[in-house]
Image (cartoon, rainbow, N blue to C red; front, side, top):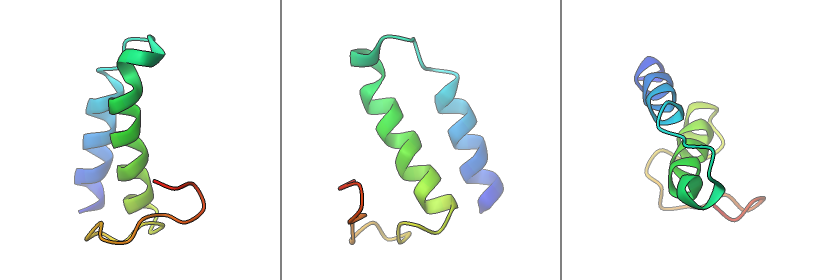
Length: 54
């Protein structure tokens, strides 16, 4: 499971363009995957992170 999340993050990072506006959705997906990987956000996604509002 963790290896899959790490691979998804790497794949998404490879799609970043350097343009903040174009990358916003990708960065949000990366952030959510990193939270799940680190155990910060529940895997079901029903409860959002209180600290950052994701």
